Image 1: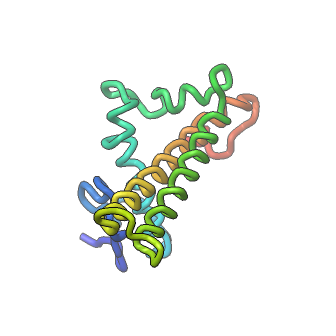
Image 2: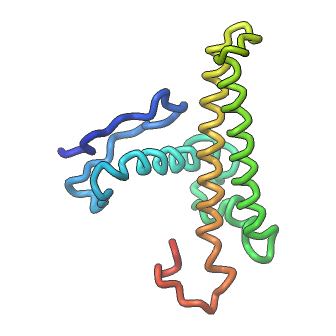
Length: 162
């Protein structure tokens, strides 16, 4: 079975990242355009895992409830809080990630070392920041899924965008 050539896992990998088998390219029908998109694929797969098995599933999914019926999408609908809400949540996640990454950098930088174990604390912050970034991707995916509901009279060339 052929797998992605040039596959390099992100290091260090966030908790839960990379669970499950590698996706075979020989009969999956998925064209990644070569290894140029392999890392993007890994990131999107990690975001999918977070939504379906990780934090997102723990907090938001009902028993067997499809993503588009979960609160993350429902709240984005025009008759609810709106698409701006989930986009704002993605932005907030981005700011939180930036804050944690800066703090992690400061802990291990020359001015750091105010923690008992700066490297361990920096690692925790780094992993948490990456989890927040995956959450931001999922919020933006919800916005993408719900976007056609804002202009139902427009013919979506993507067939509904889903």
